[in-house]
Image (cartoon, rainbow, N blue to C red; front, side):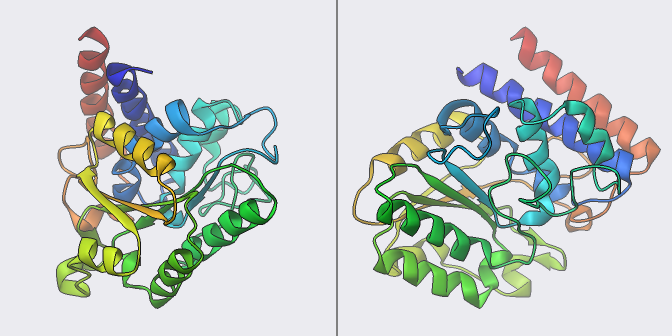
Length: 278
């Protein structure tokens, strides 16, 4: 896909996220909206996958460690054909396959169950190490939130990945600056994040997290790197694409009511129409 097509794909994900959470009246919308460009670039350009064969042994893997953003992952999986888009309307429903947090036993395309923050990178390490032992060339990707970087297990996993030189592993950090209780700098400051990751032995890039070209280039570099794991810090906006949600911590886990959903839908549709006509 070219730049315009990837931008359109990202905003289509945003519309699907909105519909999922509005239908369920439950879910974490802010941090889902902030990773749409990343998911669009990964699933539409970089990941080697077979939607018709979700358990294909040579597929690239993705661990959504910030599992509360599951609505974004589900939108991306539906867009690639892992399951019908109609399933999105049953997000968090007892008769659906889309759990509040991703479940590898319930949902095609989910490579690791997640939700308890801080554990996903350890799982991704295991996948990457297993790939090396099995002489596989697949890539392993892990998405963490910046609030999640406050977890101790994350830093143990960072040391482990560097120790084993897991160069088929890429960690994405969604640095939108907000967590459920407020700014990350006030709750538990994680800065200087880039310098810490470099000190832990990771090749580290900092990019504009809503720039699909920057994301594409960063992933390309990470895939080519040998001898150490890669980290990509994406500077993003929580609630990206919806004016009244952007940079507001209160939208971490609050679903929109019917009026708010209608306004958000209108804004996203206008945004998408402009991109399609550009």
